[in-house]
Length: 346
Figure (cartoon, rainbow, N blue to C red):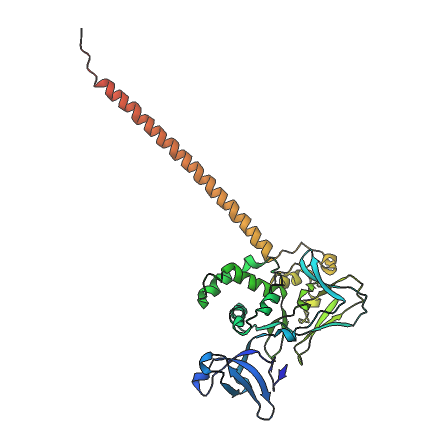
């Protein structure tokens, strides 16, 4: 982590320049390199190829973080006493030894960080651009380790809008793929504050494998000096126990909210919590946005069947009416033919 007067950036972060004296550089993407304590300026490299790797020294107020992807050498290995395994809700983090309360069991460097300033668009921009800076796509493979949490259908409309706005509709980028990307961020990221006064979403390869619990057995502590996430036990952990964290732990008011209020917040991340605290406090079973989405689909399916049945009956009546008219015309034709027949006496 590189610290300036107010802002902080992980080395290699991609940022966007503000308004510059030379308008040619205004709002250009750049890569953070270092901060000069003497000059109080950040040294950056312009990312656009037309500038041929040109370097600039800029004021801190002219920089805003866009995204960061850590090179593989900065990834934190998983300690031998921790493991990632499948649970009834997808990936989960387990501890394979007894650990006392208050012990730091993991300190991890982020794999990806993205600004929350521009919402979902920033997350899509990261995935569009990082392949150019990571030819081995190692970070993308790590990203695929995260589960979608079953909520990707919820983001289909957002995905369609982003693809239309950014003009990146082609064979390799489908709405389904983009919806899956957005769902992975929503279900697994942790909120951090690398730069003062602004929040970011970060993905940690192992810390983000811990599932949510309102009565978590671990707490996350963000180290602003390094950008690392520290996982610390809140109580004694027994061997083989699943490790859980509170994804809203940064909100001091979350702990005192009622079960219904917590569920309202959790629904924003499509979480359904069935921890001991939520069960103890009771109330109606929470419903995720995915469950609501499926329920809406069932309602639409019922409506579709009703419309089809109504149309079928209408078609049958129309068919019966047409048949009656045909039979009527046939009988009328026979009567007309009988009247025109001439009888010759013998």
